[in-house]
Image (cartoon, one colour):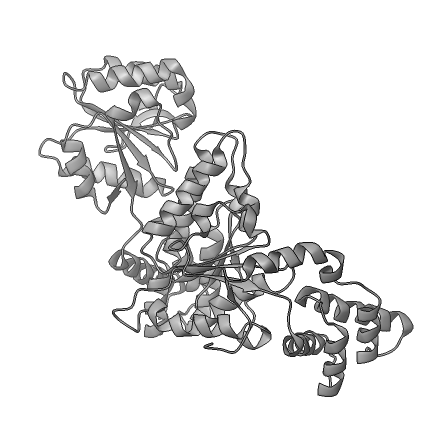
Amino acid sequence: MTQLQSAHDLQVLLASRVPLVVLETRDEARALALVADATRLAPAPQPVFRWTVTEGLGRIDVDLGPAQRFNTDPLEVLRTVRVTDLPGVYVLVDFHPFLTDPVAVRLLKDIAQGHGAVPRTVVLLSHAVDVPAELEHLVARVQVSVPDRATRAAVVDRAVAERAQSQGGFVPVDPRARELLVENLGGLSLSEAERLARGAVADGALAADDLPVVMQAKYALLARGGVLGYEHDVPAITDVGGMERLIHWLGLRRVAFDGTAPGLEPPRGVLLVGVQGCGKSMAAKAAAGVFGVPLLHLDLAAVHNKYVGESERILRETLATAEVLSPCVLWIDEIEKAMAEDEEGATRRVLGTFLTWLAERRAPVFVVATANDVTSLPPELVRKGRFDELFFVDLPDDAARRHILTVHAARRGLGLHPQDAAVLAAAADGYSGAELEHAVVSAGYTALGTGARVTAAHVLDELRATRPLSVVMAERIAALRAWAAGRTVPAAGPAGV
Protein backbone atom coordinates (compact mmCIF):
# COMPACT_ATOMS: atom_id res chain seq x y z
CA MET A 1 0.00 0.00 0.00
CA THR A 2 1.37 3.41 -1.02
CA GLN A 3 2.28 5.81 1.79
CA LEU A 4 1.44 9.49 1.17
CA GLN A 5 4.15 11.78 2.46
CA SER A 6 2.93 14.98 0.82
CA ALA A 7 0.29 16.58 -1.38
CA HIS A 8 2.70 16.18 -4.29
CA ASP A 9 2.60 12.39 -3.90
CA LEU A 10 -1.18 12.46 -4.09
CA GLN A 11 -1.13 14.84 -7.06
CA VAL A 12 1.05 12.39 -8.98
CA LEU A 13 -1.43 9.61 -8.21
CA LEU A 14 -4.42 11.68 -9.33
CA ALA A 15 -2.57 12.67 -12.51
CA SER A 16 -2.26 8.96 -13.39
CA ARG A 17 -6.05 9.00 -13.93
CA VAL A 18 -6.91 6.34 -11.38
CA PRO A 19 -10.74 6.41 -11.16
CA LEU A 20 -11.11 5.13 -7.56
CA VAL A 21 -8.77 5.92 -4.67
CA VAL A 22 -9.05 4.29 -1.26
CA LEU A 23 -7.49 6.62 1.29
CA GLU A 24 -7.14 4.91 4.68
CA THR A 25 -6.36 7.11 7.67
CA ARG A 26 -7.73 8.13 11.04
CA ASP A 27 -6.60 11.71 10.42
CA GLU A 28 -9.57 12.88 8.35
CA ALA A 29 -8.79 16.60 8.49
CA ARG A 30 -5.23 16.10 7.28
CA ALA A 31 -6.37 13.79 4.48
CA LEU A 32 -8.92 16.31 3.21
CA ALA A 33 -6.27 19.05 3.30
CA LEU A 34 -3.91 16.82 1.29
CA VAL A 35 -6.56 16.23 -1.35
CA ALA A 36 -7.32 19.94 -1.65
CA ASP A 37 -3.61 20.82 -1.84
CA ALA A 38 -2.96 18.07 -4.39
CA THR A 39 -5.59 19.40 -6.80
CA ARG A 40 -4.18 22.93 -6.50
CA LEU A 41 -0.77 21.59 -7.55
CA ALA A 42 -2.20 20.17 -10.77
CA PRO A 43 -1.55 22.09 -14.06
CA ALA A 44 -5.33 22.35 -14.46
CA PRO A 45 -6.85 22.46 -10.94
CA GLN A 46 -10.11 20.59 -10.49
CA PRO A 47 -12.91 21.23 -8.01
CA VAL A 48 -12.88 19.09 -4.85
CA PHE A 49 -16.10 17.87 -3.27
CA ARG A 50 -16.66 16.21 0.08
CA TRP A 51 -19.64 14.04 0.96
CA THR A 52 -20.77 12.89 4.39
CA VAL A 53 -24.02 11.20 5.31
CA THR A 54 -24.83 14.06 7.70
CA GLU A 55 -23.97 17.08 5.53
CA GLY A 56 -24.30 15.80 1.98
CA LEU A 57 -22.12 16.92 -0.91
CA GLY A 58 -20.31 20.25 -1.00
CA ARG A 59 -17.11 21.80 -2.33
CA ILE A 60 -14.16 22.13 0.03
CA ASP A 61 -11.67 23.92 -2.23
CA VAL A 62 -13.87 27.03 -2.17
CA ASP A 63 -16.42 28.20 0.36
CA LEU A 64 -19.86 28.14 -1.23
CA GLY A 65 -21.75 27.98 2.06
CA PRO A 66 -24.19 25.39 3.41
CA ALA A 67 -26.82 26.21 0.79
CA GLN A 68 -24.66 24.51 -1.83
CA ARG A 69 -24.74 21.18 -0.05
CA PHE A 70 -27.09 18.42 -1.20
CA ASN A 71 -27.56 14.67 -1.59
CA THR A 72 -27.14 13.15 1.85
CA ASP A 73 -28.47 9.88 0.38
CA PRO A 74 -25.47 7.66 -0.54
CA LEU A 75 -27.02 6.25 -3.70
CA GLU A 76 -28.26 9.64 -4.90
CA VAL A 77 -24.81 11.19 -4.57
CA LEU A 78 -23.34 8.40 -6.71
CA ARG A 79 -26.02 8.95 -9.33
CA THR A 80 -25.18 12.65 -9.31
CA VAL A 81 -21.49 11.99 -9.82
CA ARG A 82 -22.23 9.46 -12.56
CA VAL A 83 -24.29 11.86 -14.70
CA THR A 84 -22.30 15.06 -14.16
CA ASP A 85 -20.05 16.34 -16.91
CA LEU A 86 -17.95 18.30 -14.38
CA PRO A 87 -14.46 16.84 -13.88
CA GLY A 88 -13.41 16.79 -10.26
CA VAL A 89 -12.38 14.88 -7.17
CA TYR A 90 -15.24 13.55 -5.05
CA VAL A 91 -14.22 12.55 -1.52
CA LEU A 92 -16.78 10.24 0.08
CA VAL A 93 -16.08 10.19 3.82
CA ASP A 94 -16.99 7.03 5.76
CA PHE A 95 -18.77 5.55 2.76
CA HIS A 96 -17.58 2.00 3.55
CA PRO A 97 -20.82 0.79 5.22
CA PHE A 98 -22.66 1.32 1.92
CA LEU A 99 -20.26 -0.80 -0.15
CA THR A 100 -22.31 -3.89 0.68
CA ASP A 101 -25.16 -2.49 -1.44
CA PRO A 102 -24.97 -3.94 -4.99
CA VAL A 103 -26.50 -0.75 -6.40
CA ALA A 104 -23.71 1.35 -4.84
CA VAL A 105 -21.10 -1.04 -6.23
CA ARG A 106 -22.60 -0.84 -9.72
CA LEU A 107 -22.76 2.96 -9.62
CA LEU A 108 -19.11 3.19 -8.55
CA LYS A 109 -18.17 0.84 -11.36
CA ASP A 110 -20.07 3.00 -13.86
CA ILE A 111 -18.28 6.12 -12.61
CA ALA A 112 -14.89 4.43 -12.84
CA GLN A 113 -15.50 3.06 -16.32
CA GLY A 114 -16.63 6.50 -17.51
CA HIS A 115 -13.42 8.15 -16.29
CA GLY A 116 -12.04 8.36 -19.83
CA ALA A 117 -14.93 10.50 -20.98
CA VAL A 118 -15.21 12.66 -17.86
CA PRO A 119 -12.28 12.50 -15.38
CA ARG A 120 -14.18 12.14 -12.13
CA THR A 121 -12.06 10.62 -9.36
CA VAL A 122 -13.86 9.14 -6.37
CA VAL A 123 -11.86 9.02 -3.13
CA LEU A 124 -13.19 6.68 -0.43
CA LEU A 125 -11.87 8.12 2.82
CA SER A 126 -12.08 6.21 6.11
CA HIS A 127 -9.93 4.46 8.72
CA ALA A 128 -10.46 1.16 6.86
CA VAL A 129 -12.24 0.31 3.61
CA ASP A 130 -13.05 -3.19 2.39
CA VAL A 131 -13.50 -2.88 -1.36
CA PRO A 132 -15.77 -5.40 -3.13
CA ALA A 133 -13.86 -7.80 -5.37
CA GLU A 134 -15.47 -6.45 -8.56
CA LEU A 135 -13.96 -2.99 -7.89
CA GLU A 136 -10.46 -4.01 -6.79
CA HIS A 137 -8.94 -3.74 -10.27
CA LEU A 138 -10.13 -0.12 -10.51
CA VAL A 139 -8.75 0.98 -7.12
CA ALA A 140 -5.48 2.47 -5.91
CA ARG A 141 -4.98 2.08 -2.14
CA VAL A 142 -2.99 4.68 -0.21
CA GLN A 143 -2.39 5.55 3.41
CA VAL A 144 -1.62 8.94 4.89
CA SER A 145 1.77 8.62 6.54
CA VAL A 146 2.25 9.93 10.05
CA PRO A 147 3.90 13.35 10.37
CA ASP A 148 7.67 13.34 9.93
CA ARG A 149 10.11 14.82 12.43
CA ALA A 150 10.13 18.27 10.84
CA THR A 151 6.34 18.45 10.95
CA ARG A 152 6.27 17.27 14.58
CA ALA A 153 8.87 19.89 15.51
CA ALA A 154 6.70 22.56 13.92
CA VAL A 155 3.70 21.26 15.89
CA VAL A 156 5.61 21.56 19.19
CA ASP A 157 6.92 25.03 18.40
CA ARG A 158 3.45 26.16 17.37
CA ALA A 159 1.98 24.84 20.64
CA VAL A 160 4.62 26.75 22.62
CA ALA A 161 3.92 29.95 20.65
CA GLU A 162 0.15 29.59 21.15
CA ARG A 163 0.62 29.09 24.88
CA ALA A 164 2.93 32.09 25.15
CA GLN A 165 0.39 34.25 23.32
CA SER A 166 -2.54 33.03 25.42
CA GLN A 167 -0.80 33.71 28.74
CA GLY A 168 0.80 36.92 27.53
CA GLY A 169 4.32 35.95 28.45
CA PHE A 170 7.35 33.77 27.90
CA VAL A 171 7.09 29.98 27.98
CA PRO A 172 10.33 28.39 29.27
CA VAL A 173 11.39 25.44 27.11
CA ASP A 174 13.96 22.82 28.13
CA PRO A 175 15.79 22.08 24.83
CA ARG A 176 16.29 18.41 25.75
CA ALA A 177 12.61 18.05 26.72
CA ARG A 178 11.61 19.62 23.40
CA GLU A 179 13.72 17.14 21.43
CA LEU A 180 12.30 14.20 23.37
CA LEU A 181 8.74 15.47 22.91
CA VAL A 182 9.26 15.76 19.16
CA GLU A 183 10.60 12.21 19.12
CA ASN A 184 7.84 10.80 21.32
CA LEU A 185 5.07 12.27 19.18
CA GLY A 186 6.14 9.93 16.38
CA GLY A 187 3.43 7.59 15.12
CA LEU A 188 0.55 9.89 15.98
CA SER A 189 -1.72 11.65 13.54
CA LEU A 190 -1.31 15.38 13.09
CA SER A 191 -4.37 16.21 15.18
CA GLU A 192 -3.27 13.81 17.95
CA ALA A 193 0.25 15.27 17.97
CA GLU A 194 -1.18 18.78 18.21
CA ARG A 195 -3.43 17.80 21.11
CA LEU A 196 -0.62 16.17 23.10
CA ALA A 197 1.81 19.01 22.38
CA ARG A 198 -0.71 21.54 23.69
CA GLY A 199 -1.21 19.37 26.76
CA ALA A 200 2.54 19.28 27.42
CA VAL A 201 2.73 23.09 27.61
CA ALA A 202 -0.62 23.60 29.33
CA ASP A 203 1.17 24.29 32.63
CA GLY A 204 3.04 27.20 31.07
CA ALA A 205 6.38 25.42 30.48
CA LEU A 206 7.93 22.52 28.60
CA ALA A 207 10.06 20.44 30.95
CA ALA A 208 11.19 16.84 31.40
CA ASP A 209 8.40 16.05 33.86
CA ASP A 210 5.81 16.67 31.11
CA LEU A 211 7.01 13.69 29.05
CA PRO A 212 5.68 10.74 31.12
CA VAL A 213 2.16 12.16 30.91
CA VAL A 214 2.52 12.61 27.15
CA MET A 215 3.74 9.05 26.70
CA GLN A 216 0.87 7.56 28.68
CA ALA A 217 -1.59 9.59 26.63
CA LYS A 218 0.11 8.39 23.45
CA TYR A 219 -0.18 4.73 24.43
CA ALA A 220 -3.84 5.27 25.28
CA LEU A 221 -4.47 6.83 21.86
CA LEU A 222 -2.74 4.02 20.00
CA ALA A 223 -4.35 1.17 21.95
CA ARG A 224 -6.48 -0.92 19.60
CA GLY A 225 -9.81 -1.63 21.26
CA GLY A 226 -8.33 -3.77 24.02
CA VAL A 227 -6.10 -5.75 21.64
CA LEU A 228 -2.93 -3.81 22.45
CA GLY A 229 -2.15 -2.41 25.88
CA TYR A 230 0.69 -0.65 27.64
CA GLU A 231 2.06 -2.37 30.74
CA HIS A 232 3.02 0.11 33.43
CA ASP A 233 4.18 -2.45 36.01
CA VAL A 234 7.54 -3.76 34.82
CA PRO A 235 9.39 -5.72 37.54
CA ALA A 236 13.00 -5.10 38.35
CA ILE A 237 15.47 -7.71 37.14
CA THR A 238 16.35 -8.42 40.75
CA ASP A 239 12.75 -9.53 41.39
CA VAL A 240 12.98 -12.37 38.85
CA GLY A 241 14.18 -15.54 40.49
CA GLY A 242 15.49 -18.70 38.90
CA MET A 243 15.99 -17.47 35.31
CA GLU A 244 19.63 -16.52 35.30
CA ARG A 245 20.38 -18.09 31.92
CA LEU A 246 17.48 -16.27 30.23
CA ILE A 247 18.39 -12.92 31.80
CA HIS A 248 22.02 -13.39 30.74
CA TRP A 249 20.89 -14.27 27.20
CA LEU A 250 18.82 -11.09 27.01
CA GLY A 251 21.62 -8.99 28.42
CA LEU A 252 24.06 -10.16 25.75
CA ARG A 253 21.64 -9.01 23.04
CA ARG A 254 20.83 -5.60 24.43
CA VAL A 255 23.62 -3.87 22.50
CA ALA A 256 22.29 -5.32 19.26
CA PHE A 257 18.72 -4.35 20.11
CA ASP A 258 19.43 -0.71 20.91
CA GLY A 259 21.79 -0.28 17.96
CA THR A 260 24.97 0.42 19.91
CA ALA A 261 26.68 -2.61 18.33
CA PRO A 262 26.61 -1.98 14.56
CA GLY A 263 26.90 -5.02 12.36
CA LEU A 264 24.87 -7.29 14.63
CA GLU A 265 21.33 -8.22 13.69
CA PRO A 266 18.89 -7.17 16.39
CA PRO A 267 17.26 -10.03 18.33
CA ARG A 268 13.76 -10.93 17.17
CA GLY A 269 12.19 -12.67 20.15
CA VAL A 270 11.81 -15.73 22.34
CA LEU A 271 9.13 -18.32 23.01
CA LEU A 272 8.77 -19.27 26.67
CA VAL A 273 7.10 -22.58 27.50
CA GLY A 274 6.78 -24.34 30.80
CA VAL A 275 4.83 -25.07 33.93
CA GLN A 276 1.95 -22.77 34.81
CA GLY A 277 2.67 -20.14 37.44
CA CYS A 278 6.45 -20.37 37.18
CA GLY A 279 7.13 -16.83 36.00
CA LYS A 280 6.83 -16.87 32.21
CA SER A 281 4.80 -13.68 32.25
CA MET A 282 7.18 -12.03 34.70
CA ALA A 283 10.11 -13.00 32.49
CA ALA A 284 8.37 -11.36 29.53
CA LYS A 285 7.97 -8.19 31.56
CA ALA A 286 11.55 -8.37 32.76
CA ALA A 287 12.75 -8.44 29.13
CA ALA A 288 11.49 -4.87 28.77
CA GLY A 289 13.56 -3.98 31.83
CA VAL A 290 16.69 -5.58 30.38
CA PHE A 291 16.32 -3.69 27.10
CA GLY A 292 15.13 -0.50 28.80
CA VAL A 293 12.11 -0.08 26.53
CA PRO A 294 8.30 0.06 26.95
CA LEU A 295 6.32 -3.16 27.32
CA LEU A 296 3.24 -3.71 25.15
CA HIS A 297 0.77 -6.54 25.71
CA LEU A 298 -0.91 -8.05 22.65
CA ASP A 299 -4.09 -10.02 23.30
CA LEU A 300 -3.95 -12.16 20.17
CA ALA A 301 -7.24 -13.90 20.95
CA ALA A 302 -9.02 -10.51 20.93
CA VAL A 303 -8.29 -9.88 17.25
CA HIS A 304 -10.78 -12.53 16.16
CA ASN A 305 -13.83 -11.05 14.47
CA LYS A 306 -16.88 -12.73 12.96
CA TYR A 307 -16.46 -10.93 9.63
CA VAL A 308 -14.18 -12.49 7.02
CA GLY A 309 -10.92 -10.60 6.70
CA GLU A 310 -11.58 -8.34 9.68
CA SER A 311 -9.40 -10.35 12.09
CA GLU A 312 -6.38 -10.06 9.81
CA ARG A 313 -6.95 -6.33 9.33
CA ILE A 314 -7.16 -5.76 13.08
CA LEU A 315 -3.94 -7.70 13.60
CA ARG A 316 -2.12 -5.82 10.83
CA GLU A 317 -3.16 -2.49 12.34
CA THR A 318 -2.13 -3.62 15.81
CA LEU A 319 1.30 -4.83 14.69
CA ALA A 320 1.80 -1.61 12.74
CA THR A 321 1.05 0.28 15.95
CA ALA A 322 3.67 -1.78 17.81
CA GLU A 323 6.20 -0.80 15.15
CA VAL A 324 5.25 2.84 15.59
CA LEU A 325 5.92 2.51 19.32
CA SER A 326 9.26 0.77 18.79
CA PRO A 327 11.72 0.17 20.27
CA CYS A 328 9.59 -1.96 22.54
CA VAL A 329 8.93 -5.47 23.83
CA LEU A 330 5.72 -7.06 22.56
CA TRP A 331 4.38 -9.64 25.01
CA ILE A 332 1.89 -12.27 23.83
CA ASP A 333 0.60 -14.31 26.76
CA GLU A 334 -0.66 -17.90 26.34
CA ILE A 335 -0.32 -17.75 22.59
CA GLU A 336 -1.65 -21.28 22.16
CA LYS A 337 -5.15 -20.14 23.17
CA ALA A 338 -5.29 -17.81 20.19
CA MET A 339 -4.23 -20.59 17.83
CA ALA A 340 -7.13 -22.98 18.47
CA GLU A 341 -8.59 -24.17 15.17
CA ASP A 342 -11.97 -22.85 14.06
CA GLU A 343 -14.42 -23.90 11.37
CA GLU A 344 -14.20 -20.62 9.45
CA GLY A 345 -10.42 -20.80 9.03
CA ALA A 346 -9.91 -17.40 10.67
CA THR A 347 -7.18 -18.79 12.93
CA ARG A 348 -5.12 -19.95 9.96
CA ARG A 349 -5.43 -16.55 8.32
CA VAL A 350 -4.46 -14.76 11.53
CA LEU A 351 -1.51 -17.12 11.93
CA GLY A 352 -0.41 -16.42 8.37
CA THR A 353 -0.57 -12.67 8.97
CA PHE A 354 1.40 -13.00 12.20
CA LEU A 355 4.07 -15.26 10.69
CA THR A 356 4.53 -12.91 7.74
CA TRP A 357 5.06 -10.02 10.12
CA LEU A 358 7.50 -12.03 12.24
CA ALA A 359 9.58 -12.73 9.17
CA GLU A 360 9.43 -9.31 7.49
CA ARG A 361 9.38 -6.71 10.27
CA ARG A 362 12.28 -4.29 10.40
CA ALA A 363 11.35 -2.16 13.40
CA PRO A 364 13.00 -3.02 16.75
CA VAL A 365 10.10 -4.94 18.26
CA PHE A 366 11.24 -7.83 20.47
CA VAL A 367 8.50 -10.46 20.76
CA VAL A 368 8.12 -12.53 23.91
CA ALA A 369 5.44 -15.20 23.55
CA THR A 370 4.47 -17.54 26.37
CA ALA A 371 2.71 -20.90 26.21
CA ASN A 372 1.63 -23.49 28.75
CA ASP A 373 0.86 -26.19 26.19
CA VAL A 374 3.42 -26.02 23.43
CA THR A 375 2.15 -29.24 21.85
CA SER A 376 -0.99 -27.41 20.71
CA LEU A 377 1.00 -24.79 18.80
CA PRO A 378 1.26 -25.08 15.01
CA PRO A 379 4.69 -26.39 13.93
CA GLU A 380 5.31 -23.40 11.66
CA LEU A 381 5.22 -21.10 14.69
CA VAL A 382 7.63 -23.15 16.80
CA ARG A 383 10.27 -23.86 14.19
CA LYS A 384 13.61 -22.06 14.23
CA GLY A 385 13.57 -18.69 12.51
CA ARG A 386 10.31 -17.49 13.98
CA PHE A 387 11.93 -16.89 17.37
CA ASP A 388 15.60 -16.69 18.29
CA GLU A 389 15.29 -19.26 21.06
CA LEU A 390 12.84 -21.57 22.80
CA PHE A 391 13.23 -21.46 26.60
CA PHE A 392 11.70 -23.84 29.13
CA VAL A 393 10.59 -22.35 32.46
CA ASP A 394 10.49 -25.10 35.08
CA LEU A 395 9.51 -25.17 38.74
CA PRO A 396 11.94 -23.06 40.79
CA ASP A 397 14.80 -24.81 42.53
CA ASP A 398 15.70 -24.26 46.19
CA ALA A 399 17.72 -21.08 45.61
CA ALA A 400 15.01 -19.61 43.39
CA ARG A 401 12.32 -20.44 45.95
CA ARG A 402 14.29 -18.62 48.66
CA HIS A 403 14.61 -15.60 46.39
CA ILE A 404 10.92 -15.57 45.38
CA LEU A 405 9.70 -15.95 48.95
CA THR A 406 12.00 -13.17 50.15
CA VAL A 407 10.84 -10.78 47.42
CA HIS A 408 7.11 -11.38 47.99
CA ALA A 409 7.46 -11.24 51.76
CA ALA A 410 9.35 -7.94 51.58
CA ARG A 411 6.63 -6.43 49.38
CA ARG A 412 4.15 -7.16 52.17
CA GLY A 413 6.21 -5.89 55.05
CA LEU A 414 7.69 -9.23 56.16
CA GLY A 415 11.46 -9.27 56.28
CA LEU A 416 12.52 -12.92 56.09
CA HIS A 417 15.71 -13.94 57.88
CA PRO A 418 17.90 -16.06 55.56
CA GLN A 419 17.43 -19.04 57.87
CA ASP A 420 13.63 -18.66 57.78
CA ALA A 421 13.75 -18.34 53.99
CA ALA A 422 15.76 -21.58 53.80
CA VAL A 423 13.21 -23.43 55.97
CA LEU A 424 10.30 -22.15 53.89
CA ALA A 425 12.03 -22.98 50.61
CA ALA A 426 12.67 -26.55 51.78
CA ALA A 427 9.01 -26.96 52.77
CA ALA A 428 7.93 -25.53 49.38
CA ASP A 429 9.67 -28.10 47.19
CA GLY A 430 7.58 -28.50 44.03
CA TYR A 431 5.75 -25.17 44.41
CA SER A 432 5.52 -22.71 41.54
CA GLY A 433 6.31 -19.03 41.91
CA ALA A 434 2.60 -18.16 41.83
CA GLU A 435 1.92 -20.68 44.60
CA LEU A 436 4.70 -19.22 46.71
CA GLU A 437 3.24 -15.74 46.34
CA HIS A 438 -0.21 -17.07 47.23
CA ALA A 439 1.18 -18.63 50.42
CA VAL A 440 2.64 -15.29 51.50
CA VAL A 441 -0.62 -13.47 50.73
CA SER A 442 -2.69 -16.08 52.57
CA ALA A 443 -0.39 -15.84 55.58
CA GLY A 444 -1.16 -12.15 55.77
CA TYR A 445 -4.91 -12.84 55.84
CA THR A 446 -4.47 -15.45 58.55
CA ALA A 447 -2.37 -13.13 60.70
CA LEU A 448 -4.88 -10.32 60.24
CA GLY A 449 -7.72 -12.58 61.34
CA THR A 450 -5.97 -13.37 64.62
CA GLY A 451 -4.76 -9.84 65.20
CA ALA A 452 -1.13 -10.95 65.08
CA ARG A 453 1.77 -9.69 63.03
CA VAL A 454 2.53 -11.93 60.05
CA THR A 455 5.59 -14.13 60.52
CA ALA A 456 7.46 -16.87 58.68
CA ALA A 457 5.50 -19.39 60.76
CA HIS A 458 2.25 -18.21 59.16
CA VAL A 459 3.76 -18.74 55.71
CA LEU A 460 4.97 -22.21 56.70
CA ASP A 461 1.48 -23.16 57.88
CA GLU A 462 0.01 -22.06 54.52
CA LEU A 463 2.56 -24.10 52.59
CA ARG A 464 1.80 -27.21 54.60
CA ALA A 465 -1.96 -26.73 54.22
CA THR A 466 -2.06 -27.01 50.43
CA ARG A 467 -0.91 -29.26 47.61
CA PRO A 468 0.99 -27.69 44.71
CA LEU A 469 0.16 -28.13 41.04
CA SER A 470 3.20 -30.38 40.66
CA VAL A 471 1.40 -32.92 42.86
CA VAL A 472 -2.15 -32.40 41.62
CA MET A 473 -1.11 -32.62 37.95
CA ALA A 474 2.08 -34.62 38.32
CA GLU A 475 1.55 -36.69 35.17
CA ARG A 476 0.98 -33.69 32.90
CA ILE A 477 3.99 -31.83 34.24
CA ALA A 478 6.15 -34.91 33.84
CA ALA A 479 5.05 -35.19 30.22
CA LEU A 480 5.83 -31.50 29.62
CA ARG A 481 9.31 -31.91 31.10
CA ALA A 482 9.90 -34.98 28.97
CA TRP A 483 8.93 -33.04 25.86
CA ALA A 484 11.16 -30.09 26.79
CA ALA A 485 14.25 -32.22 27.42
CA GLY A 486 16.52 -31.84 24.41
CA ARG A 487 14.11 -29.51 22.61
CA THR A 488 14.44 -26.33 24.68
CA VAL A 489 16.97 -24.29 26.58
CA PRO A 490 16.40 -24.18 30.36
CA ALA A 491 15.67 -20.64 31.51
CA ALA A 492 17.21 -21.40 34.89
CA GLY A 493 20.81 -22.31 35.56
CA PRO A 494 24.19 -20.62 35.72
CA ALA A 495 24.45 -17.61 33.42
CA GLY A 496 26.42 -18.24 30.26
CA VAL A 497 26.24 -22.04 30.56
